[in-house]
Amino acid sequence: MVQKHRIGLAIISALLLITGIAVSKIYAQPKADAACATKFLEITPMAAACGFALSKTGTFTRDGRTLADPLVASYEDDGSGQKPVAAEQVVLFPPSPSGRFRIVQGCGGAGEDALCWQTLVLDQEKAQLQNTFAGRYGPEHWQSWSPDEQHVVLANSDEGAWWLHVIDPMSGKSHDFPADDSTENWIIEPQTLSWTGPRSFTMTIKTCEDCPAAQKEIRF
Image (tube, rainbow, N blue to C red; front, side, top):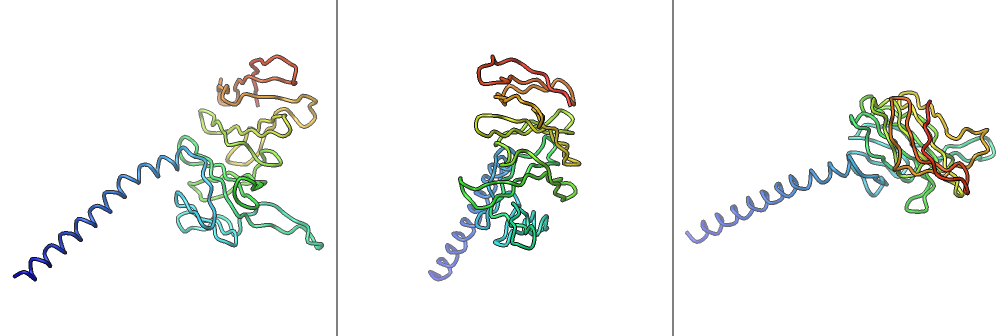
């Protein structure tokens, strides 16, 4: 009788443990989903997130489906031509408002000193990556999607000067401001961006170090 009582208690304890684990997963899931939707996340071979994973050889997958093999971070000259260098880290930007698109960076190295040369747009609906351009060293951890989700604005800075990159997520084509032939050195305040239409926005910008900050409208 005692033996049966002990077995019963063991079964109840096991069921309570399983229930506790299940409940903790339920409560943890919304937090994970929130991070996937709002945070800039780093993916490495040792740290997968949001269904995305990166192998030690640079294979980039989502939910087990290969997106790039390898995901290229940069190219190096090995004497016979340009050789692709596989990413050791991937930076995921928060998805577009509908969740269809996501900016992705391929980085050489890992950690704070990693150089994230390669910028891409992931079409999560088609599971396709599209190369784009957002500065030689990649964009800052900031973005602004147009109301119709047809463009996203990224920004990068180098030695005090800033550039804006308006990217078409379908083609990867980028409109750069200021243009390559411009002599202006912009200093921008990204948080001041306000969309005025599907192909226009305003932002507070200084066009030189000693110039006054002013609201500028950008059309593309």
